[in-house]
Length: 122
Length: 107
Image (cartoon, rainbow over all chains, first blue to last red; front, side, top):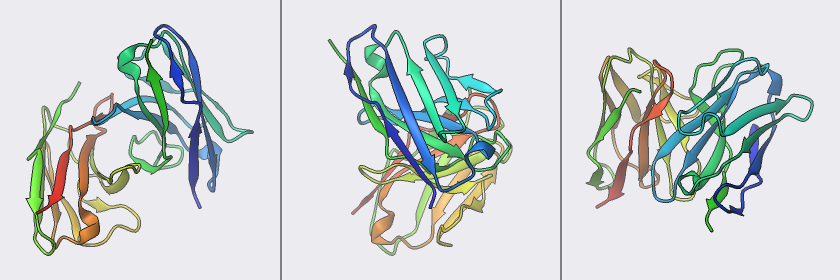
């Protein structure tokens, strides 16, 4: 069974930093790209970041570029999102989601975690 | 960035009825459009990709159609478990973008 489990969400002050983790199982991790998608409370979905299967292709939404850094550890079957210079508008439930095709950056998301909540507040 | 506009914002129907949800793109996205269903407190679920292909395990009552700038998700006969928020998403142009969602509620 494919599983993605996020962790690391908490309350952080504006300007602070946080590192989210996404641990996966049930599929060949190093064949798939993984994305971060967020959802502000009561709002819609916003794509945040993508890292491809081997980590040599990375992309960010304009709203987080220069502040967020995505990485992967294929030995640990995990994805990380380092979030710096956090703002109130970064408050959201952060999901990790798998690309639906292996080896291809197809930006369709077929398996999702349950999300981890990040709250940026003083 | 491409903008996806979904309509209506809210759709009130009864089980057994047919639901028609619309997604309009601000520019041509070809067939590179997906639909997701999100129930309250859950992660989104991929329903349709490439405009008309059902994802694994998705019932046949869900049908996607359209191309270019106009897309439709049709649910032929609503089941009680279908009521949720539905999002379209394009992948033709970077960055991937979601629509604002349509809430399908039980009348």
